[in-house]
Image (cartoon, rainbow, N blue to C red; front, side, top):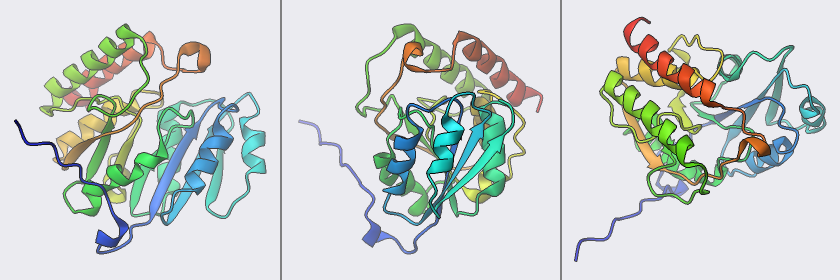
Length: 244
């Protein structure tokens, strides 16, 4: 019989110092979930700031956010929809924490995974941590071809960066603040995912992957990324590896 894998979980008592988190939340037309997401983040038992960028929503997202007044929450707004990448740049510029976590506003990703996401950085092993949907955590079963598309994009990205990621497109990415602030990001839409990966690889930062849970949505439930974004991601992988 083989040895059983050892599960290592982050424990606050093990830390040499407490790091302050900046949780950045890009949001576009997420009125169905934004209040629950913010409430979940406020419950995270760590020192933190929550920076929400309403990216020109046309539903009631902005109104809901205005009602969620809390000293740990900073609200920013784009007058028009500029895309996830642009919203992230706006949030990164305002972040003051030691570690920056990207949190989508749609409840596909669970803040209870923060412990395992933060562990490699707190232990001094990593500069960047990706939460992988394909390393064994619980996940909703969804569309086969969406899964294939994710794997193809990750494969091409790995070929271009010489990394061995399992989930380049994951929404859960965590950084030491000086890392992400120094990347000079340019993509306005979902091209931010391959751009970030290409640039952290080029600079030789230490990247870890950890398993996370994933509660995916369908297009009917509000998922915004489409096959066009997947095709654009493939082009961005090549662009940011070869020409940027």
